[in-house]
Length: 405
Image (cartoon, rainbow, N blue to C red):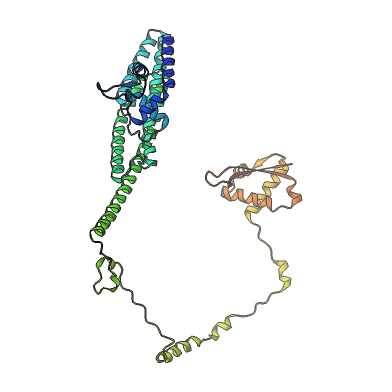
């Protein structure tokens, strides 16, 4: 049986390749006249199921399956139809699943493998059909419905796409994964196909459709904005054609300005002294004289007294040892004495230190950097952490491990 299918399929593909010019002409023009090509060639294409005649006397047209194949591979923008017949495909999947389970029950392994292959093909075909529908919607959105010229046509195409999207979401509601899980039962292959594969793709496609719907709504709003602006412009052009002597008035010269141009309140500048006006000279002089008056408070000068200090007192000053610094030194000594590698957080846990872990790790790094070059040669230091998930080049240190060379 498979050999017969292989021969028939090879023959069909050869017909497609041999008469590609006829098929593409039918795809681009929509129809083919009987006078354009040899009658034997057209009869051969009709017999192969590639062309068909809707009514006697009508021109020949492409089969919808062949047109869909070309639209899918050529990514033709005119492809505006979505395959939303999910119900029949789900019913076929359930039927083939029952055949597969029955073949397994009767221990007919060869027949069960055939049904499993058929089921896999139908599941993958359903998933590919759903994804293809989403890709068609995105392609139309990115092109902003460029296959139609007018704004009104774009709005109608957008509304058509939204209705198709709504139908597709209703079709997705037909997936009852509880029922599919019961049908799959304990079979690992069936659960992989009917539950895992379908549920994962169902979730991804549902999220994608929500984004597509928001984009369609935004695009529809933009189209309507363009339409209103074009209508306003067309109205002005028509008014100018009907009244060629019309001129726009200079509203700044009118006594009664239209409310359209009164969008802001009048602004009154604050009063100020005019330095170029002789009458304001006296007032200006008073302002300047007040700026020149500077009052010194003698009480403030008494507060500033000289500070004396004795150089000999410097020897008596003792720097108070920081607790974390002493702990870091003890940690270094512990590494030297034990001659084993020890991380800072392990030492923090063993000694039950009260410092914050992040402060402690920072203190160990600071203490190591404070050593001289000769002292640093005694130790090997490694950092443990992870790169920052967002900012490249940043490395977050969680712990420090110290050991002797």
